[in-house]
Length: 389
Image (cartoon, rainbow, N blue to C red; front, side):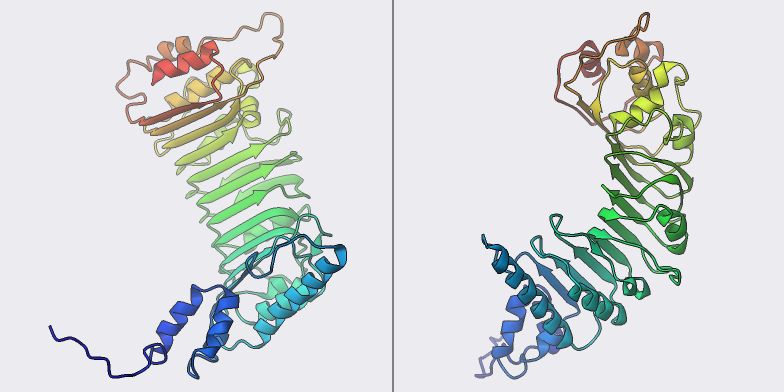
C-alpha cells in the first residue's frame, strides 16, 4: 500500500461540506459559531446546521442578583434570536432547555420563527420557578412536527388547529392543559406512537385514548380527576400508570377491561393506587384473566402493600395470566400499619399460588429470569414471593 503524501494542503479547509456539517452537528452551538475563524470555507458553515441545541451549557451558571439574572435572561434570548436570524437552510431540530431561563414575550418570536421553518423535532423546557409561559398559537401551525416536548408552560390549541398529521412523539411535563385537550387533540395526531403526560394540570372528565399506532403511554399525576380507557390501541406495548391520589371511586377501568384493551402489552409499570383499585377488597378478582397476557415480559409494581385485602389476589391473577413473564420487580411499601376491617383476613400469597398449581406448573413463570424485591420488610407475603423465584 502506498503512503499518501502530504501535498501541503489544508486538510481542515479541504474537507467536503457534508463532512463539515457532520462535525458541526456534534458541537455545542457556542463552539460551532467559533469555527468560522478556521478558514473562509468554514466561515458561514455553522449557519446551515439543521439542528440547534441551546441547553445549560449555552449560558454561564453562577449565583446572581435579581438584576444580573434579568440581564443574563435578555442576553441569552438575544443570542438565540441572532443565531436564528443568521441561519440558512431548513431546521430539523431545535432544543431550548436552559433551566434558569425565564420565559418572556421574546419566546413568541422564536416559536413563530420555528413554525415557519418546518421544524420537525422541537423541545421547549422552561424554568419551573418562573411565571408560566403561555405557548404562542403559532406552535400549532408547525405542521411538519414529528416530535414535541414541552415543560412548564400553558398550552391552549386555537380553534383553527387542524392537527399534527406527522407527529409521532409527544411529551408533556408540568404543562397546564384545557380540560378537553386530549378529546380534541389526540384524534388530530393519527400517527402518534409515544405519549407521555407527567404532572400536568387541567386533566379532568373522560379520557378515551384512541390512537391506533400508539406503542408507548405514560401517565403520571399527583391527583386524579379523570376517567380513562384505551379504546383503540392495538399496538400499545409499553404502559406506565402512576399517581398518588386514591382512585378507588373510579377513573380506572376494571382489571379485565383494561388488559383486554391492551393485546400487545409487553411492559407494564404500575403503582399501588392502580392495584388497589383492581383489588376492590378481593371480591371480584378472577383467578386468571379471560385473555392471557401472552406478550407481557416486564412487570414492575411500585409501593405495593400486600397487607391490603385483595392485593395478593390481584398479584396472583396477573402472574398466572402472564406465561411469558421474564422480569418481575416489586417495590414494597414500608408502611404496613394498616388497620384491617373486622373479619377481613389477608390470604397467604403462597397458598393462593399453590391453589393455582403455579409453583409446580410447567407453564407458570418458566421464562422468569429476573425477580427483584425492593425495600423488603420481611412480611409473610414478601417471604412467599421469594419462594416463587
